[in-house]
Structure formats: structure tokens, C-alpha cells
Image (cartoon, rainbow, N blue to C red):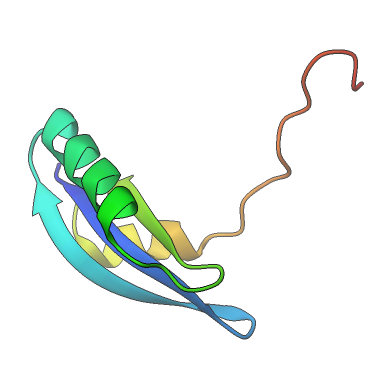
Amino acid sequence: MPYYIYRVTPVGPIQQLARISQFEVFKDASNEAKRLRRETELGAGEKIKTIFAANELQAEELLNEPRGEEPMTGEDY
């Protein structure tokens, strides 16, 4: 399964997804995403994300799924 890199832009309550590229090897995808995060001017709330999925449709579905709360660390329990 490939790794996809997306530019994620919040538009009201939804996210606009723009596929940037696709890689077969995680290290290549990770390096490219890091480079894009350093070199791309992102607007408020915009992110560069890497996702592992069978195809573009699944990647976009996974990116649009609501995420759980951030994990608590230390004595925050």
C-alpha cells in the first residue's frame, strides 16, 4: 500500500484535501513531508499530512475521520 501526502485546509467545519504526492516507501514519504512542512507557507490551520492507505479514496476517508482526544501524559489522569 502506498503512502500519500496531502495538504489539509480547514474550510468551516470540513477539511479541503489536496493530494500532493504518493510514495511506496515510508522513509521517502516522511522525508518529503518534512521538507514540505519546512519549505511551504501554510495558512492558518493548514497542515501537511502523510497517510498510509490502499488508494486515494481510503486515504481521504481516513483523513476525514474524527480523531480521539490527545493522549494524556505524566500525572494527567
